[in-house]
Length: 422
Image: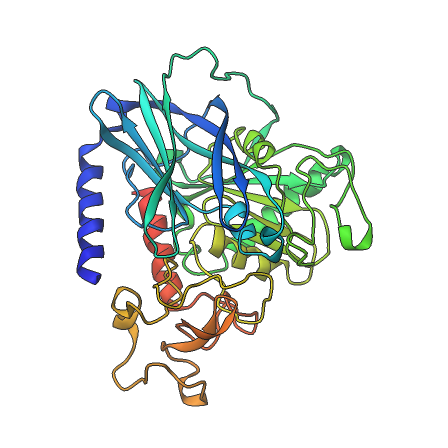
């Protein structure tokens, strides 16, 4: 399996070298909005709209995904050549919802969206979904003529943007856009100060502080009618632009929004690779979904740790390393190796961090004092106590007892940063 992964990565790098941005794309974004509909067992993707956006914030060099992260994969083919010209892995809130108790009893729809460089010629988009055996299967296909006059060209939600931290050309940087949630017009200055503060948080942590000059941070001045956010469990409701709320999937601290089209509309005011929503509240909470969005409350005493933890999810595709959450049911099959780099079921440990484990460290690794500062294989992670393992006794993806990423996670984050900025 490890040799197969190396072959896939080598092939991706080889294909990337053959895809020249200017031969297939222009320097702006094409966005495809859709709906996920289904229940615990089913999913249908239905087309909603196409939107042309002003900026392309992504790499113009690494156009083919080399990581194979995420529960979905977007593939873009040039139709005349039937050639793969762009791909990107991602995850969604919908696929998380499918593992909840509610998904057993109802069918519902959620908003979804993918972005790609704007094509010069006709393309075919495919979306593939990872099954329980980690095999991608096609669930959606759509052909696009870039001259189609139904592609929306207006900026759906136009707001001013500003630079929080600028290092250079967005196509050679990791671009993160901060979106305000629950900030009124009178609180826009507070939002700008909060952007500066959370930027400081990011650059306190390795590996981001070492790569500070390869990162751009942007903000969008988009006020809400009211401050704060919804807290359904306390019967508190606020009129906010992004309709975020606590109690997502009935987990009080899970702060998210299902208004994903609006999130994309606001983010389009700046070049971006990652979206981070800052919520104007002191209540503890947040969330992060890989290549979807990140979100955190800004005024809680734990906001710094929540901010970086959630970015580990949204940017790095890192899994939760704790085992005490009851929100999700059977999230990681024990007979399959998780795609997330920081968890293993030991089905294919060679493909994970075995090379970082010192000789003499037992696998699995007991939670004894002599191993607590070592890289090992500690049982418990991915919301379960048995059969899923993490690399360290503690890390910021596990609990705030630790205030740093472990070496496994750092290695993965560095590879991602370099892919965006090469």
